[in-house]
Every structure is written in structure tokens, then in C-alpha cells.
Length: 286
Image (cartoon, rainbow, N blue to C red):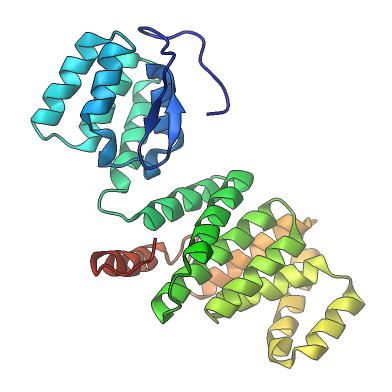
């Protein structure tokens, strides 16, 4: 956690509790609640353990809360109820915020680590938190590369979507060269019309006209789509004043609309289902 909370219910512990799975240290009950909010999709049933309850009882001196959580755990209640009790007891967030946090907590039920990370990254990108989304997508990609994961068609489709959404996030930050590189990798993983169109659009915005023409001249397979992109940009430019970020996102939106999608995770449900099948079969995808 990047900052400490100075006021807390109970004692401010000298020894942190490290949240399993995401390895974030917290020193008081409020910091635990903030960790729930900021990492809701990544937190799973591992949080429901005696070590946490003992830490709350011993280090924070919140014995009533600890006893209630132990009762919830012994009655085999779900993750949502366990975390909701902590959030309501602490009173750091209002009712609407608690409902939203618990909704995200339960979204990850049954998901692999990779699924959870992708879901959180997609949520960040769709809400406009592009810098955080980039970090989340890069983390998934780095772990995938470090482990030398398989390159089956299904896995490459997943990685193509992750690279594509990474490009979307770079585009939101107006880093067109990085966006183009991410879209290129998406296109190489999974040659879909969306990935190819986004790659060309990012190239067009990251290069000067003559440089772009030379590049397309050396990559003839991109020629037909580049003409379409130029026409789309001309049309957008005539309709209204639009910056690079807005134009690229509008092109992506138009392309997804043509393909039957609507947002950064248009194929998310299909992709998550593939991930779940891989995860259940024991293949290494996370």
C-alpha cells in the first residue's frame, strides 16, 4: 500500500497482515478495507482464514469482530458475507460502496489467478484508469512470458485480447507508439479484424504521413485496411474537432460495433470461458 491510515478502530498493528494471493501488507482494519476496495477482483477465499482472524483478535484488539468472523467462517458462509461484515463493522465506506466492493469480490469466484488479473485490468481500462490498467496488463504478460506458457490457439486468443486491451489503455494515455506495439502483438497472437484495424490506426497516429505510407508499402497485407482507416479518419475529422486519443478510440469503437462488440472487453465472456476450461483441465494458463 502506498500510504498509511493514521486513525483506526482498534490498535494500529506493528506487524502487518499480508493478504494472501496479492501479497499486500496492511496494518489496521481500515487498510484491510481499502485493500478490499482496490483489489476486489483479485481477493479470493484464501482471505477467510484463522491467521487473519487471529491477527484481528491479537494485534488489533478487535475481539468482537474476530469472534464474529470466526462464526461466519465456521458456518461456511461465502467470501461476500465474510468481507461485507468487516466493511460494515469498520464503517469506512457507505452502503453503496460496500455493495459494489462485495459485487466485485464475488465476481472472481472460481476464477484462476490469470482470470482475476484480467478482469481487474479490464475494469480499470473501462473506467479510464489507464495507467493502472497498463501496469495490470503488463504484469499478466510478464508472468506469462516468464513461465514460458504454451502457445495453443486458445491461449494465443486470450493473449491477443490482453495485448489489444493494453493498446487501448496506451491509446487512452495518448502514447500511440506504445499502443501500436501492443496492437501489433495482439495481431501477431490472433489475427482478427479488430486487432489488425487497431494496429493500423495506432500506426497512422504515431507516424508522419510519408513514414506511414512507406511502412504500408513494405507490408502489403495491411494495404486494404489502411485505406479504410484513412477514410475513417477523414470522415471523423470533417465531422468535428477531435484529438488523437478521441479519434483512435472512435475508430476502435466503430470497428467493434461492426464486429458486434461494444467495449474494451467485448469478447470477455467468451475468453473467460476458455480460460476456465483451461484452468479446470489443469493446463498452465495462469
